[in-house]
Image 1: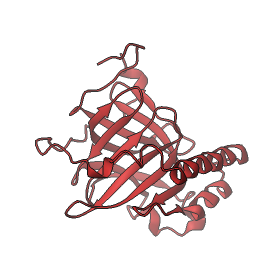
Image 2 (image 1 turned 90 degrees about the vertical axis):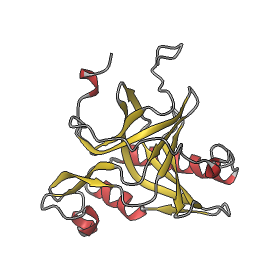
Image 3 (image 1 turned 30 degrees about the vertical axis):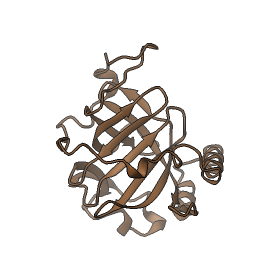
Length: 221
């Protein structure tokens, strides 16, 4: 459906694609089919179900990116592969202009584990989903309201590899500090009770379309 401002909004239960471009390219490196939980001018919430077939980056020989030493992790040749999400499901929350999204993780049996603040480019919406670019640096947040930085080594290496210049790195750090302020004040979405949310059991697991890497400009209305 379309909002009063002309922007598209999806109904609960619709399937869309949550995608990330490769850093410095227009090629899609990560694609995750998700189910819309809520889509308003203030918040997009989606559910990635266990067992969802996704697209992820791998080294050219098919081995995991994280098996490559950090020094060459961002310069070694890469490709993509299809793979099933092996963990429990993930609830993803994103406010339109925030340079991050917040993900919720549970252990088996729906014991809430943590929030994960994924620093990223504000998401661009198109007819089939949203596109962003990952900014390497992340934050884990725990039920006792403690938090810690994640992937600081990858953030530093991405700069050394030329994937992020000094100005962009400074913007990412500033975004991270803004997110920390939100955490310490226990603002939205941490105080909103999303950890008690559960998916509709009738929802099917979304399928990965054959044209998962299609160009939005060619398909948007």
